[in-house]
Amino acid sequence: MSSIPAERELSGATDLRFEPDVGISRTLIGVATVSGALTLLGILIAPDRTWPNILVAALMAVCLALGCQLFLAFRGVTSAGWSTVFKRVPEAAVATLPFIAPVLLLVLAGGMGVLFEWSHADVMATDSLLASKSAWLNVPFFLARAVLIFGIWVFFGLAMLRLSRRQDCAPGPAGNRRHTVLSSVFLVVFAITFSVASFDWIMSLEPHWFSTIFAVYHFTGALLGALALISIIVIILRRRGYFASIVNDDHLLDLGKLMMGFSAFWAYIWFSQYMLIWYSNLPEEVGYYMNRHTGAWAVLAGLNVLINWVVPFLVLLPRAAKRNEGLMLKAAGLLLVGRWLDLYLAVNPVFQPQAPLLGVWELAPLALGASLFLIAYRHNLASASLLPKGDAFYEESLHHHI
Image (cartoon, rainbow, N blue to C red; front, top):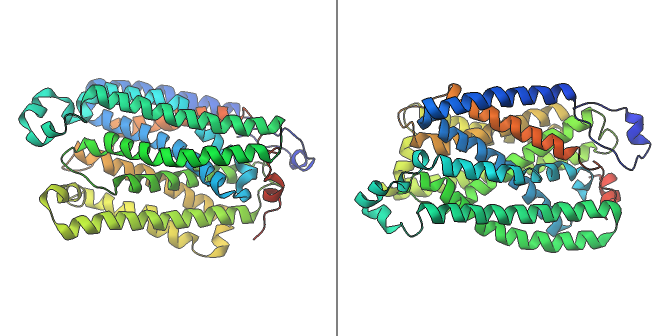
């Protein structure tokens, strides 16, 4: 990201635009090219290791985009004006959904035989439990559900973006009222579609196991990851001069509160799921945690809790820490690593039950997913003014103080 003179922002320019740094863009393209070639090679040489991590990378990108869409929807239904000055930051992530959707659909279709044991007719024929689920777990219906779910998410995402862009030309409260209605409908639809997606794309990797709290757990993680991403981008833009006189320490304080709060909520849902399964001690349920809390996997399971809750919660607990750019940046960066680790633990123990593997076939898909996401994100961020001055809450947000 290139920096801009602070006086340009202070002058009250009506169309402050993000200008992507050419050097960073070239680096991202280079990383995407190399990691893409390695990922394709991995599909041929080590599909059992590569496909699961392609799925992890795609899920990570989807969850970040959806988490940002949730952030905007919650802002709409609560009329929370404090975040208006930087709402283009989560909007740029939402705008990546039309690019991410076909990628994940290709992953689900292309990796079907490796990822989902129920996709094999001989497995379904010899397993009575899976056979009883065949009306739901069958390839055509599975892919049709995925297409429908993505269609719904993209429709609402683009509708939110259109409303926001229109306010640049037609400012006023009417756009905010329409956004509130749209957000209210989206939250209801999201609760259903995200639950189905979580069951289909992650839980059905182990089709004998089930958890009724599974979708809530991953919804919490998606929003937590999005808050971390938003915090990182806002701080970087503030340091580079774009938000130097726009985003103040109280904006960071509120972002820090949300990160700390949802980190604690993630831990609460994690414990709720674990405690109920541990207490009931039913054979059809405990296998999920036995695979993840024994041997070398137990180390990563412990790190998962430390990274997603213990460390960021303690770091962000003091009020001063949430107003400190450096500490906020470190906590948010750690939480993004935690989001990847959480998804890695949800997927990879199915395919490497003995011990976790972390080599080129695991890292190449991650690098590919991250570089492609950032390329799309930076393009979207540069496509509209960073300052949504037509939003009815803009002035309130500009003078936000606690």
